[in-house]
Image (tube, rainbow, N blue to C red; front, side, top):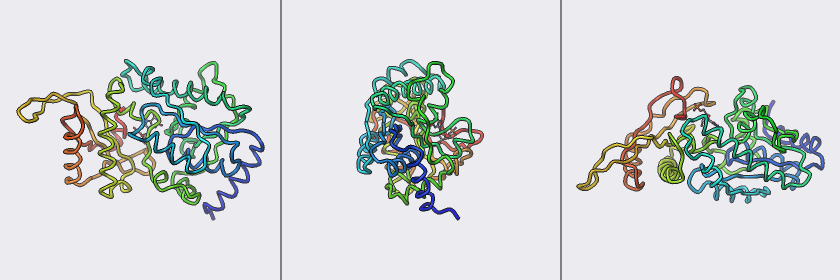
Length: 317
Ligand code: XMP
């Protein structure tokens, strides 16, 4: 009979035994999995754990500051690394989705390796891998995905020579959430929608620039905050917005405008493998669309994605 308390006690005991007096480094993403995994490891070995949270410049508006703050409130020892510029440089001129993923993954590894190097005598790499990541060859969860997909690249970064500790690799997402709740992790982290490791980088169709990121952050903020204010956030499995590489004609006052189009997407799903679009109320969509067009400079049209997966995917790239 599985209960989260039994799981927590057993996992902490086994982490203590496995890790002993060694040091562990772990990348955090702000998501549920890495937060719960880090908290378990922290309960087991305390300050022997150092966490690294990288600002890749592709996070949601205010996310870096807010997540860093909440981790510190949880007592985790977290190093925040602002690497926005490195990521933007690595992405410059790249439009191909896989090319962008590779550039982001490579840069993440560079940054993480540099930080891991600064920790003396580190022996273990903590990861938030959950069971579905283990059975799928390609993980959908941030740092672990990045690391796995680069396993065969020659000249491994130093941190990849570390032994791996994955306390959640027998759990499904529901189990992770239950464990997180029992550990006292805030609802804001537990209830977070999934967010792809490459972040807004794969929600900006075409090449990524800092200016496009800022535009999309504003759009996304209005949409997500709108869902929260309307009490709809928890009814949706994942939501986000895409900046399309398309301009369309509009009118503002007596002026003709020629500006960007954004697409909003909200899906229901169990595990992300299949998904349906959510029938958000028309009034809600109308209000959010108005807010976006009135408040975000450079956007004059909003569309709503009504495709299910399959045959569409959740992300557009
Ligand atoms: P798709 O678009 O394949 O997405 O229907 C399914 C789930 O996976 C997330 N996703 C990613 N997560 N790196 C990630 O860490 C990626 O490259 C990536 N691509 C998609 C997506 O947000 C959804 O939750």
